Image 1: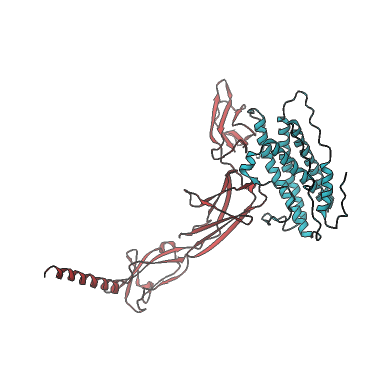
Image 2: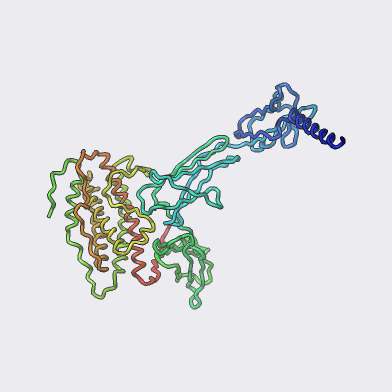
Length: 281
Length: 230
């Protein structure tokens, strides 16, 4: 019958194609490799013999044959620019034999970790970063200990280098210890900090600082602001504010400390001069 | 008036303190402030608040000196020992919601009791302190702490709350056992200073809470300062 014959034909063709592909294109997915900046690396062309005739390309551009050691590609003193997709081809047939996705980077240096409570007494957050880039992906692992108790540090939804801890108990005499370890394909590093609950309290800056002239008096300025919105309980944990001001043309600041209230009137401004006013919480 | 106490064993400083603390409890309470034209408890709460801040400041230098005297590891900034022993020290730590919901009487009572105990232990510390300078600093601090106690007592009296009387058996005592080693004694000293520091941090907030409840919305208090090279 005519119908089954073409079907059987397709099946055979498909099988042949698969076998052909397997035998002649062993490497479809590039091998991912991480190497250290400044080091030397030798890339073999997959399973090819040392004396096989091959050509290497990086990101589609041919590489000079003098970089070859037999069928192996030798790169000296790796730079960031060496990162890319390296492919070796059989010289005559241009058949792709092997691919390497090379990433040049560095092992991580000791991370910088700091913690702060801008939402006291709700909790605190810890942030970290690496002092120098590694140029390759890093993973961080943070652990928080309160005495011997492990506390959960919830990842920040927006910032990837920050996590949040909720205070269970207030006024604790036991220190908190936050440890972070960072690792990538080339190495790892770690650091830790220990602190008392009250030493990391630092509110966000006051909001909506506005200075208005006083209609009747050109030497007065009325400054108003709001408690930072992140501070959860200004009633029980009041903030005090520091205000400082100076005319732009002078370097000397005038300071005012305000233990209560969110407004202050400057009475010794020079009429007609531009002022800079800052308020800290 | 002193309860019968056996001869304290060498190094049994806590036992000795039990004796002293009993004495302290029975001291006459500071008389209530003379209130003619009574402005309410507000000013004395403010004064108590200010005292806690002052003491916090004073303790910073005292603790630094004392911990250096104890030597390493006690004076190392990262020193983070487990809280073992020092069971009788009043602990400032408290659950946030519990702390928030404390009524005024309980809030004041907890502060008063804590500082009474802490003052007692601190006086014991003073007796063993090696250098004259340390003894002077400790004595000065004890006097200030006594002032804070008096101030709290004044607030309680103004609000009509009775001063806490010690129940038998709840006084700080230390069961006689093997002589307290030198290191363990230093650990106790360390925790004492730590609790003092934490209580003062907490009390500022306790009294601020009381202040807010007592007073009508306060006017802004401004202190113009001309600071050079701030």
